[in-house]
Length: 102
Image 1 (cartoon, one colour):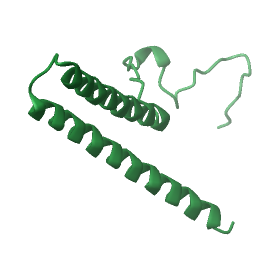
Image 2: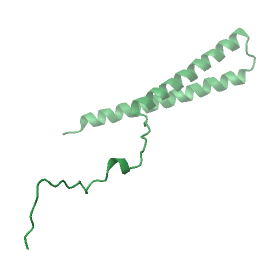
Image 3: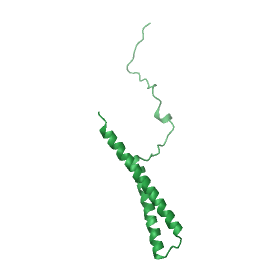
Image 4: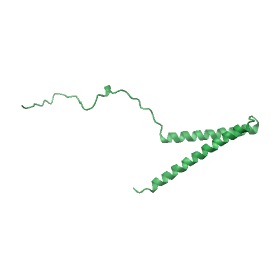
């Protein structure tokens, strides 16, 4: 028995599924590392500005509660110290990467 091959016959590609049969999946945009860093910087900046406004309000007499001002300043201070710590870790990781031999 011999098999005759006819080149005019078109065989559909059966190895890959048709694109139209696949369910549509929307890709959510995942934030990049840069986006997260900028978001953190903006949050710390907002907290620093809020603490400064609280101090000015206390000095001008718009606000009488010193506990609120101290709490906002402490919150801004802690977030700034955390930001500096993260920055130091990133710089150290960069330096370590640069010391690696290729």
